[in-house]
Length: 478
Image (cartoon, rainbow, N blue to C red; front, side):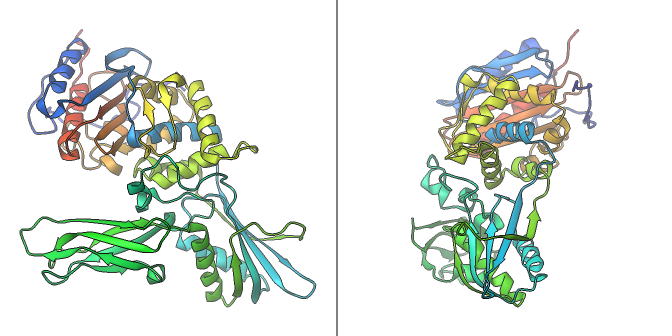
C-alpha cells in the first residue's frame, strides 16, 4: 500500500529545541554526516559505538553511519518479531485456551485444559473459563490434566542471562500462561534500620518461599534502590536495597518457576469457587483413547491488539509467545523458538531484509547474542510501510511524548507526536528505531544504536534524542 505524505501528521511546535533545551539549527541532508560525527565525538561516547541509518520510506538514502555493521538491538528486535508475525498470521489471528471433558461409565469426570500460549490470559480469563465449566453438570473432577505442549522446546531461552530469568520481565514462556507468569510483590519501608517488608500481591504465591532479606529502611536524604532475585530451582527469594522511611512501597516481580503447575493450581481453586472439587492435577497431556467433549474456550484478543503491549510497553513475554506461535505453524517443529526464528527470517527476507545482516535467537531482544545492522532494521520498516497491515503495525508502536515507553521522551519538542517507534536497552546497549515525520521533509524510517557505552540511560537517551531532533529539523534546502 503506498504511503501518502503526512499520513499521520501531528502538528509540531513553532520553536525548535534539542532534548536538553538548547535550540538547534535547520539542517540540509548534506550536513547530517558532520552533525553525527560531532555527536559521536562527545566524551560520553568514548569507547562506544554509534550506528545510524536513515532513509525515506521510498528508499532514498538520507544518512548512514556504520549502517552495515552489527549492533546489539535490545528490545528494538521486537520490531522484527512483530513484523514477521503480523505479516504471516494477519491482524485477526487469535489464540485459544480450551477445556475438554470426559466421563467414565462409572460417572468419574476427567478434564484437560489445553494451553494455546495466550500471553494475555489473566485472572479474569481464568474466572471466565471456570464459569463456563460450571455451566456443565459437573460436581467433582477426578483428574485435571494440563496440556502444556503447544510450544515444544525450552520455556526459558538458553541464551538469556541468569539475572534476567530470575526477574518477572524474563519469565518462562509456556503454553499455559497465567498473569504473564510473574509473581508480583511489594517492598514496603518500615522504621529506619529495619528491613523492608515483603508483601505478596497474591498471598498464596508466597506460600513455601524462604525470604533472605538484605534490605533496609533509611532516613530522608539517603539514596533509594531495590533489587530482588531468586535461587535457581529453589523457592528462595532474595531482597536487596533500601527505601526511605515513610516513602511509597516499590512494586517488583520475579519469574514464576513452574508456570504450568501454577496455572493448574489456580484453575483448581477457580473451580472450587464454582462448587466443583478437583481431586488431583497432572501437568501432562491426557491419555489418548478417551472421547473428549469441548466444554469451555477462552479466545485471546486479535493479534492486532496483542502487538500493542509487545511494542508500546516492550513486554518480553508477549514477544516470545508470539514468536513461538509463529514457530508452531511448522507441525514438525521440535523447538518453537528456533522454528519461529526460521520462519521469521523467511518473512523478513520477503519484506526486503538481507537476512545475512541479522542474528536472531529470541523474539524480545533480551539475549545479548541478537545482532542486526541499522540498515537491515530500516529495510524491514520500509517493507512494513508497503504492507496492507501497515496501519496496524504503526499503531502498535510507542509515540514520542504521548504513549508507551516513549511517553516521557521528546516532550515539548518538534518530535512529540511525530515519532512512532521502539526503544531498547540492555546492559550498556541502547537503541531506538521506527518512523519519523519531519515537518519539512519526507517521512523517514530510521534506526539508531549505541553499543558498549559506559554510561547510564539518563546519559544515553538524550544523545539519541538529539539525533532525532536533528532529523526532525531536516529541510529539502532546494
